[in-house]
Length: 602
Image (cartoon, rainbow, N blue to C red; front, side, top):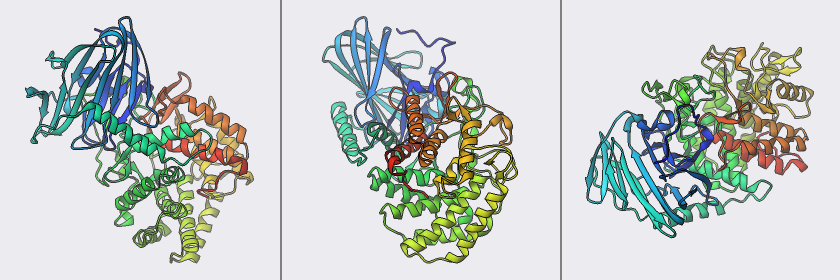
């Protein structure tokens, strides 16, 4: 049997590939082990949690029984993963995928002989409840069934299978042209055994689904394949029943190895609303953009005073945060968290994001909604006084509230887009009052957030700290890109927050966010720098940085939230929707840079 990972061998986040059935997800290590899977939803309890611990916390390994070199790829325009192994005995291929949801969520793994004759081993370690609960496993008809409490998993294969040290082990050989399928299906423990899955038919249907979806991409500009790969990831992060898009399918992957900045991202952030809508609509995915807007309106519906920054995939509001004490964390990065207390924070920028999403939806041809506008007016009525309050800001700090510049600017955006919805689309509202508030916010920001000594706007009023979110000022239209203050801020942020050419969010060692220092560069911020440079007419610099960012992706085109340039490894939850959204939008901006980048938000 292939030797286990050594005690001193570090795992890498980029070692993983991503599978999805548009309701749940799994992460597959390049060495053949599914180390993370939550059934039946993205935010359900994991049945494989080795990603945040060890093999005894649950995993599913399918790999040659002897050492071999592995290469992998996604089949074009899909989330069907192929891993090819070269061993001394021959060559084999493993095809991993999650069919779009039918009766129940399932994972299909097909082992295919390419040449020679290769011995293969499957080790299925099921641990419900984030790696804590050992199930009762029994042989029922043609299946091995693992059950604990409300959950069951049904494992089927024609390979010889046995129990061994609380592990379901299958061993077999494959020769050229032979195929051995293995399937795993989740179902409620009180329900009947799921029907047998035809692996070859499931593969055809899954490829047909993705081929059809990818063929709808209307973008034909530069970096098309890179854009399409990111759009496929976004589709894979979409919870199909509601249209909500999770920020990532994982929790607690650290933004600094050994640090405490480990958060649960298996939820939907309103902050991503506008950029997500733009990425989908500009690529021709109007149906997905409409579904995202519908989720947004359902989740945010109610009293604007109760508006949250994030919700569950079906619009759930209660996302209590707690720590899993029995999991040691990725590379011993603790704590491991479930839920997200940021749902209870005040973040004023979210009002701007929601209003901007309503406006951009109309600009991109989505139909209007009187109910949505009624809600939008209620938001702006509340914001007429709330914009003056401090908040936790875009970075969801766990320290004292402040008057964050980005939050004030997004309040400006809310009133600006409210005015434009009235002027351009015939909505009714107190335009003159909103115009007065908009001008007041702009004057206050230009007065209180400008630091003459630094020659830059700053993270918050009266601060000397810089923040990459300041790059959004020209992108949302707050000030024109040629304004001397914008160009000076761009230069200051580029110089002071740069790490090997990429951007930090801010200098965490300067304190103020309530957490110990330490994190990598934030990849969406680096894409914002691409946009800001392009908007300033510096297309060559923007394109050079964009291509460097493409090189940060792993071998199958996936991005995390952050990156450590010193050791060249990805950090944070993975794959990260915000990073892929930013990649798509930056590609669109670069495609239009010769004629001046699109004014999609301004």
